[in-house]
Image (cartoon, rainbow, N blue to C red; front, side, top):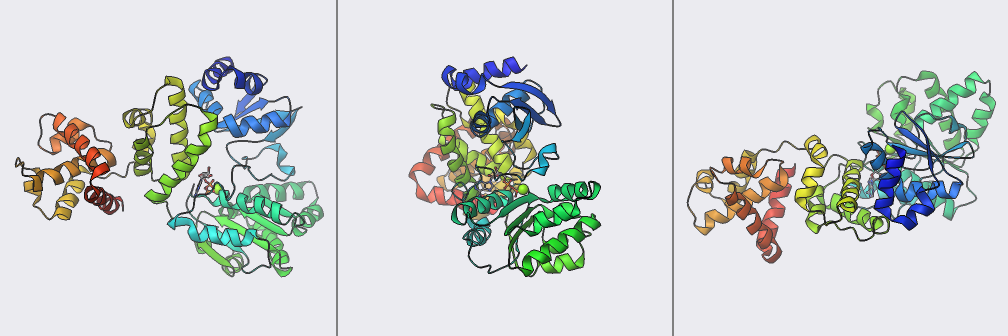
Length: 439
Ligand code: ADP
Ligand code: MG
């Protein structure tokens, strides 16, 4: 199947790129969602991971392999460089993880939901005297915690090369702690962690229920804070909500600055998609995604940024395969599984009700047969919103509008699509309604 993946990659990236980057690779094995690829040297592995990683993963999955991540091996040494920064539990944990090159402040899109977290991360990344310690970042999956932490590590690496910065996920910390106990290397372990200047620990909810590791973490934590060394910690929830975390740790965590990353809003999602699109220009030259598609994705995929990125990635792969511009219809088709999973379960009835309230007309009038403009326009707006915000088909929407023929819905949707380019009143109405319906 690897041969097939290679053939697909050649078609996707062209013979020249293929010869330089993909040809030299071989597939060693795939276990637990990780595909191991052998590369002739670290440079190739690194470059391929960054540039073609997502695409290779896509094609491996198309061949029936279940792969979430790539790992590159060079001369027998395992060296992870791709989709995700922290591996589950590979042997290479004894070496400190390098910050992921893609996760920088430059590539982080700032919006209302994350501006505080971003500002706090920026401040810490200046490497000045510690103003808040620890910095505790929390928020749901895929909202950018790990990204910000890697960005801090990068920036400190540039601004303060004299500082010893260590990024580690809590499960790596646990793993190392247990290994040190087993190998009787506790002195080395303590020494290692207490000699850092900036310690970044990701996902500390993994310490739940791990008493002895917590104890050690607490000591490390105190030793560093007492020496005025900066700590940056993340979790998927607030310190007080992490079960089985000792009270001492909770209260120490709350002593610094606690900031949360809020769920993304539409603007932020659209911003991220635009930024991401720019990075794809080099990966998929000449491939086009219609402008409305990004808006469609930002509307419909509100769960987490990783899913959003995955969707865009899939669309690019699709576009490069079919060789034409991806439209909203194609996106709906190609992403139906993702869309279904992140459907907000907004009903057509809710949309109709909101629209009639917004225009201050009776719902029965809006759904009735009268064609006066003051009713027809809101009716079309409601149709458009149903098409954009739900995964109902046109005939299904048609039925709820009492239309036997779904072409009426299609005309309504088209009409609004036109109007929203030229009529700012309509554009504003749509925006307001969408917001009201989205929360
Ligand atoms: P978390 O650690 O909170 O689960 P990550 O930091 O791993 O989330 O983010 C998931 C993915 O979404 C990453 O690829 C990251 O680059 C991307 N991402 C999240 N937030 C943003 C943002 N504001 N701007 C750009 N990319 C983002
Ligand atoms: Mg994370």
